[in-house]
Length: 452
Image 1 (spheres, rainbow, N blue to C red):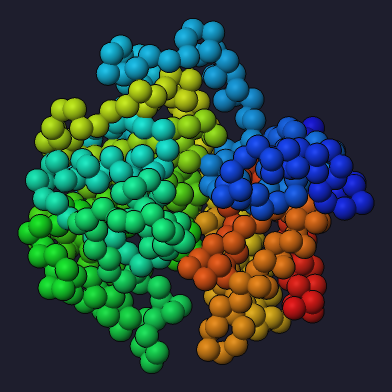
Image 2: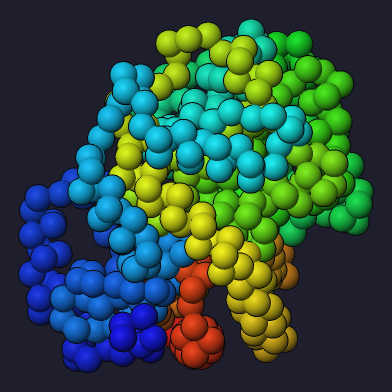
């Protein structure tokens, strides 16, 4: 059974001959700007592994960049999709209501941890669409124009989300940017100002957020503060508890809505259904949540859940779309959430986290290049540095990823400087696969350090 297999490379080199032929075709047919990173072409997949067209078996610690928390090709999700396909593919929600849309909205309203107890949900097709609609909802509900985002943020590649995203390599040469987007410093504690304790740094970052009201937009013009509870592309940087509580207080004092972008953090990845479940425990629950990725196990689906009073204040016509809440994707999502809850994948995320964090901490004693190990649940990142000045080491990260791939382990970088390796394995990974992945990673790190 493929889902139980360990990684195995059977071709003399990568890509194998069949994969190379497809990759050559890709080079002729597909935009080069849609980058191809790994020398493999997937043929079939189950659980946390996939087989390429040459018969090589890869252990996937990227999971479609956080899309496959419930794993590849879960048989119950496949059955749910097939059942819906036998009925109908699509019914546009603005024209005809289908029960799957309503049932999924009801489910999301019951599990999303928002400040307001009564909630409403709408669906779109992707994470960027979810974030963009969350902003439109906040602006419509508050009748205010401006948005505050953070350094290190990634919110998508649409026009608005491109402006909200910090790293402008994702938006190179595409100006002018939409107006009304202002940026504060995210509490990146590993790279806090020199000489500051963590507590002092949290206070510093809170004050830098407040400074936006003086330096960029008065608070009364700010509709929402948009934040990833754990930054994804920014390097898997978690927001500290005290900072989250302060942001909630700032929003409450100024009539600002707090939007959680949980596109990558959601659906058990962080050891709870959502990272915002921690924020709710801290008394800092958001007002609106944007979600996508793992909600439908790989089918295109995203959405926004908001407090009922916020949802009811949105003007008709400004939200919606042809494919949002597609019937097949909704069926997949309902079954995916059922599996996540029933099989306690949030608890499994904590087990995975404990093993990976322990291995990385041990490696950090032997390799000075490991600067920081951080994250929540199994959304873990390890930052690599060159020296005591914390100079980023992206070259080492790229070499580690290359060696891992050649040995059947797929990993990916992250971070503003490209010097963070992120761990996003499907939460259905077996213990044997987890141990084998850690073994490959250790050997790759040792070899990369020697080669570099």
